[in-house]
Length: 99
Image (cartoon, rainbow, N blue to C red; front, side, top):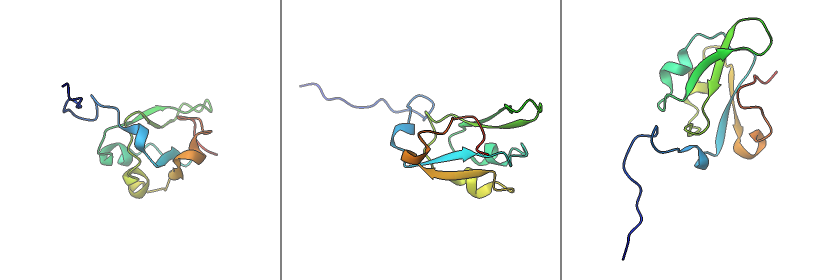
């Protein structure tokens, strides 16, 4: 009899975002300070250029690995990340700020 099991590894090897119940959504308040990047336990936040043509940076979430813990939203000094119910957030563009 074969037993199926997952190979041990970090979240970089094993996508964990599928069981998230809350999703962090970046807003246009982001000042690109990097606090969320430093506190994210899964290292799934990076910086990208804003889509408004300003040349400024904002955070981007890798939702394949984000567990929805909310640490990024809690630590953000300007409250630029809001947590939304996963089902409500399905229509949000993943790396476009919510205005």
